Amino acid sequence: TLEEWIELWNDNAKPFRWTKTADQIIDRICRYCDRISKPAH
Image 1 (tube, one colour):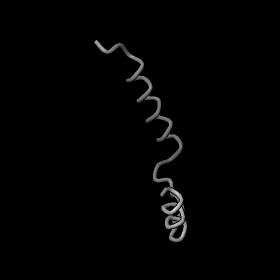
Image 2 (cartoon, rainbow, N blue to C red):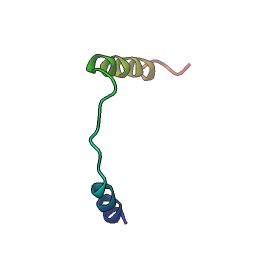
Image 3 (cartoon, rainbow, N blue to C red):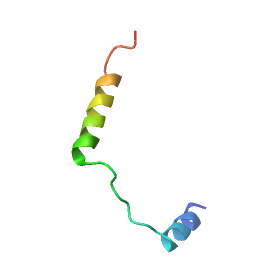
C-alpha cells in the first residue's frame, strides 16, 4: 500500500537537493510555457 511505501521511504529518507539555480529553473519553465502556448500547426 501507499502507507507502507511511505513508511519505508521515511526510514531511509534523504534531503532534496536543488541541482540548478533559481534562474535556471525559471528560464526552463518560461521556455516550456512559450513552447506549449504556441499553435500546434
